[in-house]
Length: 51
Image 1: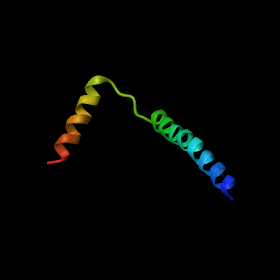
Image 2: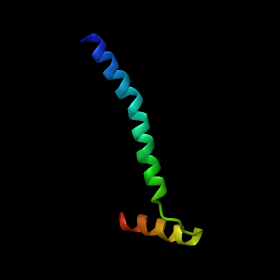
Image 3: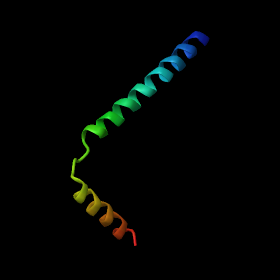
Image 4: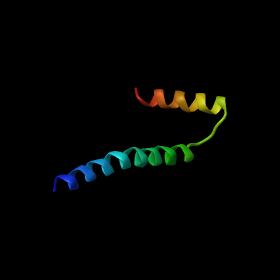
């Protein structure tokens, strides 16, 4: 039983960073590319909406 718990903890400990990496990489691939002017306008629009 103790060896099962040890193996389980090791598998979860090693798999978690890989899953997180894949999720972050997936978001990175979906980002919208824009030029500087468009990015500044989008940033201003975001701050204006918060008020």
